[in-house]
Image (cartoon, rainbow, N blue to C red; front, side):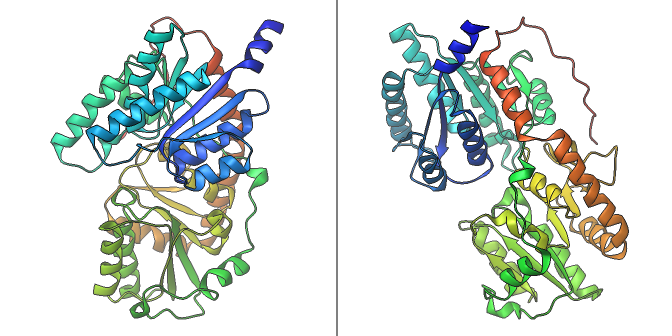
Length: 418
């Protein structure tokens, strides 16, 4: 036991991601890095100087910028990024390299292979799939190419962490890697550290201290019921279907309603959202660029909606569960594992790309407030019990230091989805 503890104390862990933005994968890295920094030597590397870089430095953890990392495909930049990573490996001599984005997965995997060849060191390589990119809404040829590249990337890694059992099964089905390499570790949060503003204070801060970004949206106060979401304004989040549902609700004139979208996006996705609101003259729609600690405003919503087309295991759903807000979300990725069908009072699952069903479910919750409240209370208990940050850290650490198992398939029960 002493030797094992010494090994853990002296282990050098390097986390790498393509961009230093504060998304789900960025939060995942931040949680792992900060929770393990008192026991291991931790470093983080990414492209840019975004919020993740800033938060990592605030936590007194070394941050290294990979200047050639970028999301767009550029062969020269990929080669330069590979050499930057290689030099960083020579400098840090990590025992564990944990990569967290598809593009970085391939570049770091190749650089680490060369590093092993040149040094005869054998760092353990871990890759976390935060939702497979080949499940996105893209042309078939792109999906086939991404799937092929995912298989090549998987060859470099000792273990591939899937943030949902759904993703693990998809990886096996598509032969991305042998089943013994793929393991499920759900994302987790520390509920005790979440601070939510009281409902009226959160709502007032959002609605009264800021102006609608679309003057033509004709925002008015007070509003009796609020529907909201926190999500990037990208195609994968399916926000157009939420806007379509909100238009149907306004036409039906059930109650005075407001819609709040907290997030950010780049053209053309952002323009599509703006243009839809203007074209359909939607009233009482608030768009807010990312605001600090956005989850603290969750209690401003009477209903939280995440109409995603593709997902991994979204932190925002866990946070909404902790805030005891009734949730409606698409039946994609790991969301059904969060809002299980076995207990329909933890959240309502809907098919993606279906604004009509989304409208019906919003009306149902508005008309059944007692059921909505019970559902939200049950969700809070579930997130505390099943999706604790401590559990995620413990299971991830076990993957770092456990010996590689025999090449046998893990038998995990998985519900087929229709």
